[in-house]
Length: 402
Image 1 (cartoon, helix red, strand yellow):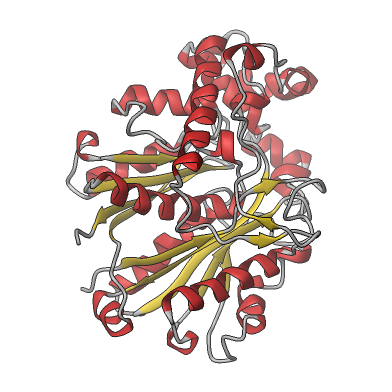
Image 2: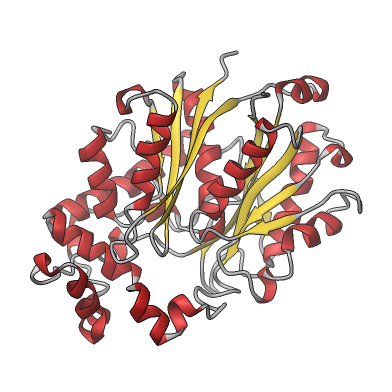
């Protein structure tokens, strides 16, 4: 059975997910096309050698509908013979695109493929596909579907985290992200994008390097009103032991909405040799998980624990945990349960600081995990994302030593 390797990785900077964001003028297809062309320019890749292009996206409607992967591949000039497809695992879509592509390589179905994700929240707003999980009252009632922020506050309440602890993690994410950019950690993978005015957009724009404990403490709870409008009642019906939900998360301890895209070139060692590329990381194992849709955000950690065990490893063997910052409470829980200290958990910051571009986030994290392993000379890293309805995906990488 052949191994699957990450051969290269590119992404856009993440922009504010609003009409004021620096990527609002670019369609999701535009972003994928830009990265496909960047892969060719960086690697000398013959696009005809790519056997499939798989792109994750969480809202597959309007500009993100109609199989944007195939559309982008045609517009990128990759030829009519290169297939393309999209998948939706909510926020874990980008990670799942990589996981499924790696599985097909290990099965011998593919030798070389591109996997990644895209989301333009500013042009295709969250929930715009009007799926029954968030638009049909009866479906929501029967599944226990609640607002993600209320689910985060429920988790914080059950775990007993304080507002100060949540704020401290949010501040940590901002300071780590700012420091990582200042060190140039992302320079090798981020592809500058022309802004609408022609200037280059080349840095994640949501980071608040000036954040302090005081500025975070001054922010009001973000989900208290939503909870009072009926969401708390749904959550407490499932978890009466919580007593009363403490609404502690703010915009400073929640993932910021972002636009962005990422692509990874994934293939066998033999194909990499023929292309003259050095494999950067081996995909050791992948895992998907599903958990209670009311707690919702716990499946990412479950996927981490599952993939580490599947590989015959222990959490102490993992050098880097790239874990989607689906609110501070879930990151604090993973840190506590897996003894993943600040030096190993999101060492360059995460989605609280740099933004959450739903379908792209998992691909950004897998690529970022490979980069961080290179930087620190580590051996194993895990990238994992929690998604809506209690879904999670994890990808475990092993650095290929030079």
